[in-house]
Length: 387
Image (tube, rainbow, N blue to C red):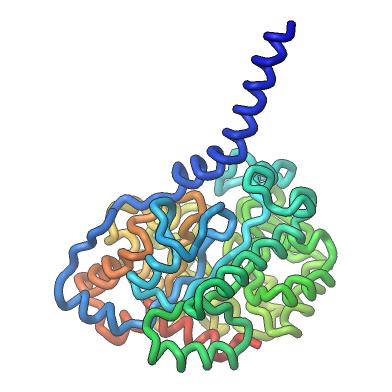
């Protein structure tokens, strides 16, 4: 009996070690990877242009992974050194707080959650194991701690004034990177629109209304009901706009998109999406939605992953989506929204962003158009929209 208990004890210890020390990195490595690995070979023309661009990405999910973003990693898409190598100046860091099991783009209930297991395995604060709001607060604190340890090379931007100072500094410090915090789903408000204050105070400036399921505020295109704004959602929208927070319609149902465009007093963004004009599925925006968002001065981030743009080994797929979005919404309304480190494979790591510059050149975009798409549109949007 004693020998059997010893064996069971050893097995339990091994199971704990695997859960806490192996599982998080295994899942990260399995789901976040790029097909094209460095070194990245491009034409001298593309390389020269790329060095002069202001590059911004509207959507990244790396905060949920147990990775030091100040060190160059072999896992995942992004970290500060690889952003600097890829000349990425500005990144939206989004807080993923809940995802359903069996996640798909057509219909998910919000009754299950993958992130609880991840939060426990990565030893997030115990309070975050049981509270979506606490998860969002913890993820914001992670980015702030990275910034504090970065020797000034990563700054968290919370206002138009801070953004202006960041742009001024970056002209002299080309390796400077800015981060803007966003939530991916107002489930973090835990049913109380007033919790938007706590989210704002934590540094969040982008409010993604929904993720892969309907929540207490709004309907998701991938939810069950796929409805619009609830009464609480309308109140939340009013409070968020009072604080000059930016509303993100990514993942939103058609009804939610229509109602927000009708009620909002400010331009909105779609941080990461594809377009039905090139890939017709439940994840992507229709031409009519592209026009409506652009007409209100909104900004649309074209994604890099397969459901958004098609086979990701072919960068032409990304450029086809960009080209269609520009044709419908106009050149001033389109940016990049990779969805990197979001449990979807990427066509390259952050250090390989020059490959996209080269493909845009190949497809006939002008230098002015490339500058706008790669980041100047987002810079102009934030100058106007941040508090």
